[in-house]
Image (cartoon, rainbow, N blue to C red; front, top):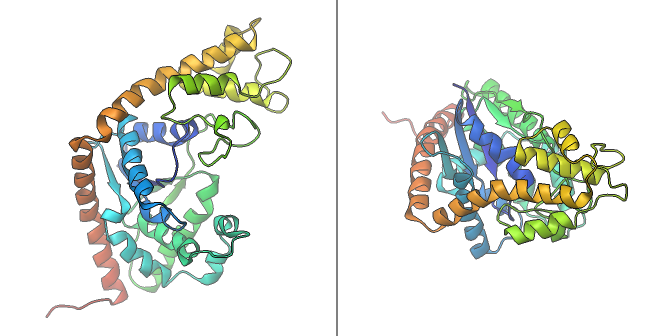
Length: 329
């Protein structure tokens, strides 16, 4: 059974794009893989955070994972900062990570552009990301295009460590999620739906109430043609709504085009509303049941303990390989 590692930052609310592109696939992967799902709170502090909001987001993200179908009996769900081996190995990775490599990271350039004060952690966090993955001997790491560069660096660091010291780390493969709907902005359907979009009407969040979902979809950008047809170049708004409808109803694009043939955008948008709400409502119900329960704390405690068993073995091997600490007589 292959091992998968994935981490999500607890910054902002998850959108339906995060659900379709990541969490829903994780629920499937846990059936056939040894999965570690990590809430990477130490990555979140590379930029300023409100401490109370951060703690709330950590708990909320864990509850969303579980409400969406992550099963703690099949997968390990834990919080990064509760497994100290992550920062230990992150520092060790920094010692073999070159400045030039970090300077080439596109995300650092994007996030630091135009800012007077940028934290050193934002610059070096790819070293910590590498540590996150290598601690669990991950075979596969599901990533989108925005993280592919970091995964390539992780592979380089693992190989460099193994060559320079001892063979400690598995070289992870980059796993591009299976082709599916890429959910775009409801207001600018040529760009990806984002949890950080300043226009709140552009994104549907997993915890939006049904009335909010309905209002956002019904005010989404389409066109004046009035024909429900999939054409990303000429009809990006309609095509995006078809992708959303298909992702949540399970119907193919062709089936949906036939279903709404001769009908206006009003009926079509209502169909999208119904499809999204039918999936999100039961998730939200479970989310609020889990959020403040002792069960959530128990699952996270057990997850941290289980993750620590594996991570601590790896860190001891890495420390020994580098010559750190003592060798007892």
